[in-house]
Length: 410
Ligand SMILES: [Zn+2]
Image 1 (cartoon, rainbow, N blue to C red):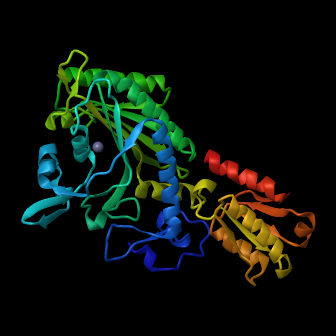
Image 2 (cartoon, rainbow, N blue to C red; image 1 turned 180 degrees about the vertical axis):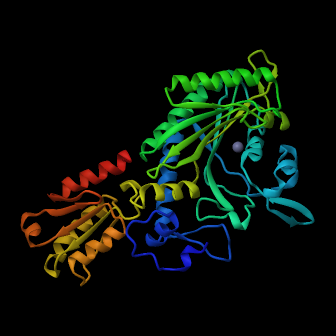
Image 3 (tube, protein in one colour; image 1 turned 90 degrees about the horizontal axis):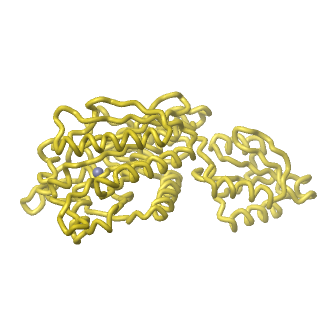
């Protein structure tokens, strides 16, 4: 539980449990004062912020609006959404001014209040609201908590798309492209499950069957591997769950696309149709990375801590072999700094092999060594993680290589 309280495993090289990796790389810790809640260290927040930056860049170009809603709201909102009746045991409640408030377990009901705060026309749809900074809370039992994979406080890369029924197909198709692109940066293969109408479903059966047909044709068009899970949809709509397979051949359900016909009913959401009549939109709930906490946990185990360069807290480290090369090595270091590379400098009195070993344990992608020969030739000896010695290179040349990995997020 409290992997952050010990320091025993930091010397192990092949770590497969994300809690040990988090400890060794100084990413996060857990403390008994806040069970199931993560204390993010500086290195861990670098990974988080890089993921967030990537998602924001993508979503901005795809026409999303980023929104944020309160963490603490009166229970009446969740009574209206139905969660209070069906999900209450998972919600944390607070007594404020003699009223019951809840810590939101999901963002959806509040997102609908933003939608209904204005008159929406058929021409305004789809409206895509992303909410990637808000904390949500779920009352997981203390015995089930497990590092980053099951927590009580999390941040989803959540979004709600408000669409007309005729827009479902295209919207989901674009989402599949987005999800495929996201996972291509992590070398994880994907499989798709289409979950259809359960027996306890709510809403118009015709809309259900149209939507299921749309989803299936989108999956076919996307040329992806998919299975149909009969009657496995949520009571409020069919969904596509996306499983990612990691390097240890484990499947994780991380991304999801869920249609919802119920929430628009409950909150009486409307848009003005072309003929002037009032119509209900459909909500698509979707997450790509799932929660930041869980995704980073999965990613750490998938990569055994060898994060791609763009996500690595330290991207390169520069070491002069002896004191004589310090000035030259500093110059190289400053060049890297100027290019916004997250670079460290190590000129400690330890032997060069010990310093290299330390950098390897920190899973730093590039170790740059400068000796007399390198200084004479104005170059640097480069060791690339998982590859080894790749020879001497000019500063510009290695900078270009690293910057390309960062920009392309490979
Ligand atoms: Zn939602």
